[in-house]
Image 1: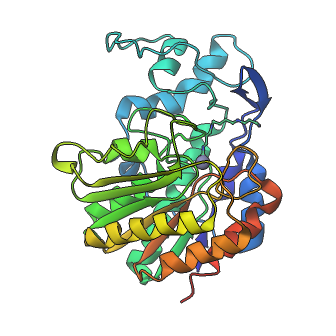
Image 2: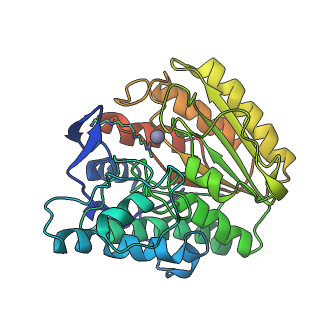
Length: 336
Ligand code: SP5
Ligand code: ZN
């Protein structure tokens, strides 16, 4: 298994996040990626430039990400840039300069700060995903693992949230589609619904999106991921949501995974992009499923049995002491 990671991804290090009305240590720590890299062994990626990122994200959003921290500091603020006002109440789509106005315009939660190195780390995280894709396309690898961090699946075309800034899986899926590697399917097995990926491809008939996640009536991100969200316009029917209750263990999870696998194959997919979060682990500090390390190997075996070229893109997983071994257990199923 080819594994890719760029050490510049470690430089994104927000100090704290707003959680349950108070400041807590940021869960999406650099040590997550260090632990995984220590277990699986990775090589640095290549640089495919900004164009594949711009194929998914809006230009004004990218410009915002590149300058937000500097603008925050030049306005005399300390710490990391955090939004506090959001134009969601049917306010006009104004283009404003004030940093606080822009933070609200391009964020949907207050738990995803922008720190000094956020843009650089997110850029290299996206390049890591593109490098994994390139290994499949150019070298004919059956599988590749992109150790993306910061993660990506909550980021939309013009918004950040859920510890995500650039949507690594969507960037790779769009690049694959544009390179004629499709039909492409994105399957998201992170504990949380992949709302950014869903939004990006919601009206797209050619890129199929399926997600298995905690029922959003109970868990983050709440406003996306319900079973009746199935795509719109030309993309009607090309989105599949399989929400599961808190406490879900392997037998129920496995049944949902088989359902998703059948849908992926029914789409005629020639490439699978897997948004892999290890926050479905029983010991995850912010999640409520009950998968064990052995279950991660079973999950990998099930997905590998579909025999599709598969790019595995890292998303969440916060049980730092177990994370590397859980990811290694999952990847061990992908031989050849
Ligand atoms: C990629 C991913 O898994 N994002 C998940 C984002 C969830 N954010 C909301 C949950 C907040 C929990 N905060 C706990 C802070 C304790 N350090
Ligand atoms: Zn997650």
